[in-house]
Every structure is written in structure tokens, then in C-alpha cells.
Length: 60
Image 1 (cartoon, helix red, strand yellow):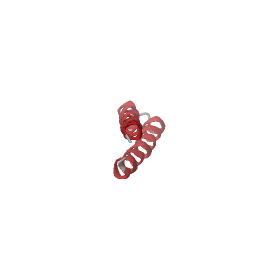
Image 2: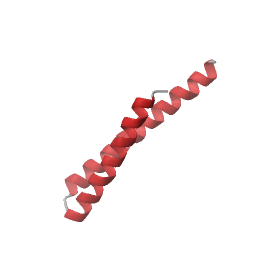
Image 3: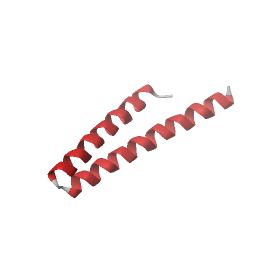
Image 4: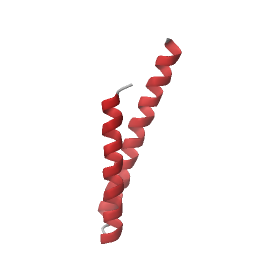
């Protein structure tokens, strides 16, 4: 488990949520889409770290 990667992913998720809201409020669909993309990337990182944790538990 990489705490640093989880922290980075959480920060990216928050950044994406903020950017999505800004895009929605300002009417900028590009910002909104980019925010959603950042959130999806963060979710992939969290899922990857969860899989790594489960594999490590299974091997121990």
C-alpha cells in the first residue's frame, strides 16, 4: 500500500470535484468534463491500491 499514492489520488479527486462544480457554475463543459476525468483517474488509483493490498494479504 502506498500512502503517498492514496493521498495524491484523494487530492486529485477533490481537485476534480471542484473543477466540475466550477465548470457547471460557469457553463464551461470542458472544465466540467476535465473535472470528471480527474475524479475517474483518482478512482482508478484507489482501486489499484486496493487490489495491491488484497494481493499482499493473500500472499502473506
